[in-house]
Image 1 (cartoon, rainbow, N blue to C red):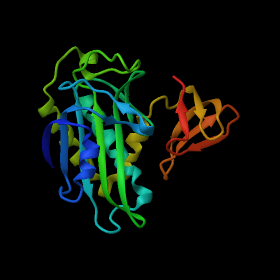
Image 2 (image 1 turned 135 degrees about the vertical axis):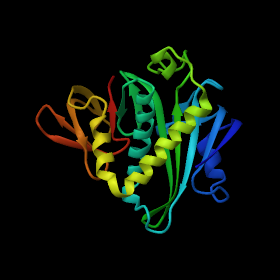
Image 3 (image 1 turned 60 degrees about the horizontal axis):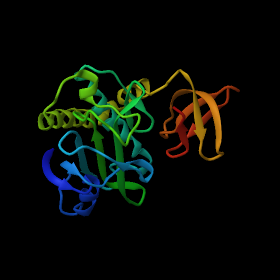
Image 4 (image 1 turned 120 degrees about the horizontal axis):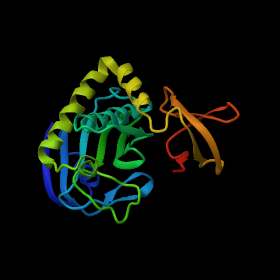
Length: 242
């Protein structure tokens, strides 16, 4: 994959989508300063200029190569790539379904994936990542943390991104024949798995107590409530009450 560093950009995901026709598959756009970063559910992603990794990976697929029903697999691969990178740095991450990475009860990374569909297949995917590396203060985010805050060290961004992309490439290559192992590792790292906690059902507007048991084959989160009922949630259907 080819990494291109941009000095200042509104959003690497937005830039990748703007240039999707001209950029080859495997292009990585990284920003030293991102002025209008985007997160899930329309949220903004605030990041200190020159302190963190904010980047997007553009992948393109042939007809039928990646069915739209399996697009969530890219989320698993990217989440595990970030988690593996953090483990190499000496910390213990967890994946807050579907695609946030936590250290303890604080968020260190957010992932935003935007797909372009052609029929029932994914034609292109832009995988955006915001990973807090050297930032030490988060005035606008009460539950955020960074790698530097966790280890007390400072990190060079360019070699850090190169290593993270190398891990992602390895996992992406392995997924064609070893997806089951990736799925099992992803589910084993789920935040609050096996622990009773409070959740918000956005469809029924009900708060309930439950235990995360895993993820099903369709990418839905499985939560067992106190009655023993297994509830299954798609993206944007469940909230964590932390």
